[in-house]
Image (tube, rainbow, N blue to C red; front, side):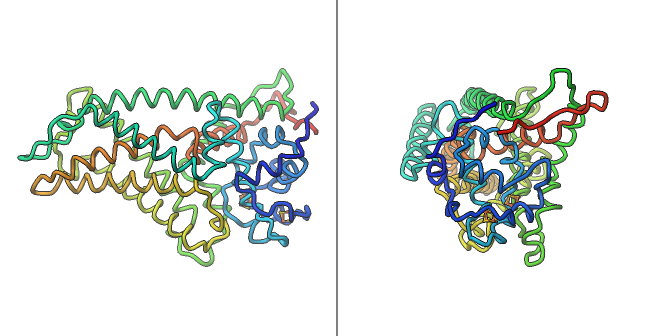
Length: 389
Ligand code: SF4
Ligand code: SF4
């Protein structure tokens, strides 16, 4: 298969945060030190060559983009300060923008002003929409869902979730078709999907490769401040909150516990939500502090979308905790109702922006890990070869 070269590609990647990549003279040090690179999945130098040669289709069809965990080891050893780790991050931003059929991601990534204005606009729209359903604010006791009815929250959440899933699926098809164009697969081959699924789930939940292989900060920082643990805290926290919300919805559906019923802190679903919220807050706070201090090589450069994603995630955890405190205070306070509105706006933004922001790596990395783990069933080997450019 032939690929067209686009001479403007490197300047496009610069808009997505590829700093100083023109200094790269292809020595290959970065690939040699990358703990996740192998003969089969060779990066980041190969990705940089695609960028320099204008081979955007090859870059977009490279699952290796998503196998990189942004540990920064390659950046630390680059003799030309070309920042290959940041190049990989920029290439992922570019890929998210290209997989996005709505074209919102490219505007958010390439213009800090648009990014900020769009977030504000979305907050106003969401706030106005949610507030239009508001009821009373009881002062004798705190009844949050008298103010914003839980049915409105559930229904709006389900509709927004379905739209986001649809957009994310379109992006996923785009990613897979790009990868398929990069790989020649003989027709009679069959893959071991079961093992690939098991391996992907294990990697997503345990961050095994990140924890075991990316050791940049291992010698200088305690485990609880290492990048893999902060990342895992955010992931586990988010998953825990998602599970707690789903369980709460299920308990309400079955009539076991209507939404908003007071329960003690040790009630299992409440406890799960509290612990998951703590993990989310810990991970996001650590990541924000590291970005501010710029101590690690992988945190040296931050785009406005890196910041906005982290801040929204952090605010969603913070407003959730303030609400939880409000529920257990002996007296009801009027600000608690406004805090509920703020929390719903922030969580709504997080959900709606999933396919367009860094959050999308949850989908694309999982898919890349799955493709990476796919091996031909023994009776159908040998098999998959990469299409030569
Ligand atoms: S990015 Fe740096 S380490 Fe990697 S090939 Fe280029 S010059 Fe060498
Ligand atoms: S940031 Fe880490 S995982 Fe990514 S290419 Fe560089 S060394 Fe490899």
